[in-house]
Amino acid sequence: MTGILLELDLTRGVLETPPSSPLAAFRARHLPTMRELVRALRKGAEDDQVVGLVAHLGGPPLSLAQVQDLREAVADFRASGKGAVAWTESFGEVGGGTVPYYLATAFDEIWVQPSGDLGITGVSVQATFVRGALDKAGVIPQFGKRREYKTAVDTFTEKEMTGPAREMASRLAESAYEQIVEGIAVRRRLELSKVRELIDSAPLAAQAGVDAGLVDRLGYRSDVYDELEKRMGETTPLLAERYVRRGPRNLKDLRESLPWPQKPVVAVIRISGGINVGRNSGGGPLGGPSSGSDTIGAALRAVADDDKVKAVVLRIDSPGGSYVASDAIRHEVLRLRATGRPVIASMGSVAASGGYFVAMPADVIVAQPGTITGSIGVLSGKGVVRDALGRIGISQEAVSQGQNARMYSAQEEFSPEQWERLEETLDRIYEDFVAKAAQDRGLPVADLEALARGRVWTGADAQERKLVDELGGFEHALRVACNRAGLDRDHIAVTAAPQRNFLDRLRPPESTEDLAAQAKTVSLTDGLTSAVYTALGLPPTGVLTMPMTWRLT
Image (cartoon, rainbow, N blue to C red; front, side, top):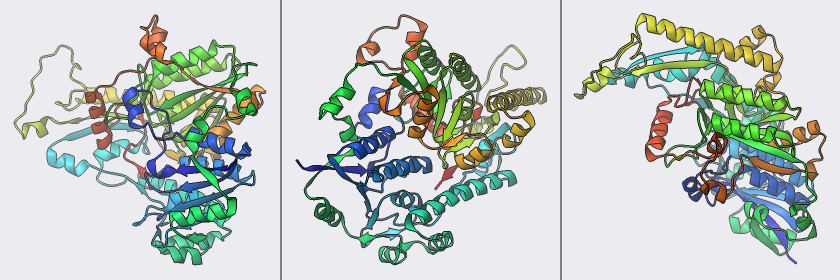
């Protein structure tokens, strides 16, 4: 029997969350999820039929936190004594290869095509400003924020980074850079100073990468596989996601797949995309998924009432959104904790603002060092487009009753009294956010407020400041949940909630809980609106939204 050579093809991208809408599922039908890849490596490490691992790097960039998830999984696979090889045509032809190379260093061996480059040029945090364009168009930006680091509104109100924004961006870049340099230095057995020197010398030709100790071998794909065949003998290459999706292949697999004896359950509840009031959305043609407080609340109540569920992992990958939706979810998390079962928050690439709000009541918060989190702050406002529309011959008139009926109209500026009310609202929400964060994290309000002010942190910096408890990925969070519940990680059932089969989706809802568990149908207009808002940096779902135009590359 030939051995299995597990393949990771990361050139297509990786999904954080399985698509919930039929259209999104069809579009992503051949893409693996992060959890599938991690599970495949964990399972492959224990499978005698799996003899090695080869990964093709490149394609859509992964976030720093996603790369750290994969690095941990590759390290666990290698600990079984099986070889792991990474290859690529080039680590970026014109830069942008730093994070992919950081992932490659988790493998035993790195191959690069002879004509390739090492574009390991460092880390950059980028922000976009449209104030100049708004001025030319005649749009009047009117936004308030709490506090100085809540920089999403700067996109519209400023033409460059403010002092606090630059300070925050500099630390984000510095923290990410420190993590990457240390990871490269440890795995390639180089001094930290040497790694920094090589990064400052990049981009490097492939041969220069070999000479510097950053690359092991030069070769094309066929060379990589020919070499692996010499080492391992004849093998059957198999994509990691296909490997983990296969049915039972032996007696051990069959025993693990049987529904009896019944195993204790750890439920996983995913909060992905913007947080809004209502039901989850699987995402439209142009918009991504969103998490509704009705759906997430129903899932939390369902697991609270299920005696088979012994622990819960909240997997959060969200920049936030609605304040009231986030608060409703937080309430249900606290209600679930009151049953005595541990609730562990596992942060993905980003869990900030409203995404942090729903994580903070958990028993333990786990994040990767490169997770983007914090952003404990609030923003609100509008862009007045009256003059801009007037320039192209469009005008509007309205008749209304009530002094503030048109308060949020894009046709009129805030009156002094309305602006005062907006400021009062911002103060009220910010104070509530800070007070609840302080309560959940067990910190004095004054100490928490100093860490808040809208500031975004990496997971590593957040952990140092007690906004995060432990560093690690989803598997680490799962182990923490098992330890807290007194369970054996190798003898549990991991289930997603809410869990609805095909027939459940077809049946009409019998109660509001049934209705809440259903994903909302998203129209083309919904997706287009969300995409436009995101492109402009507007918070599409609410006042607890982190800076949406910030990019770490």
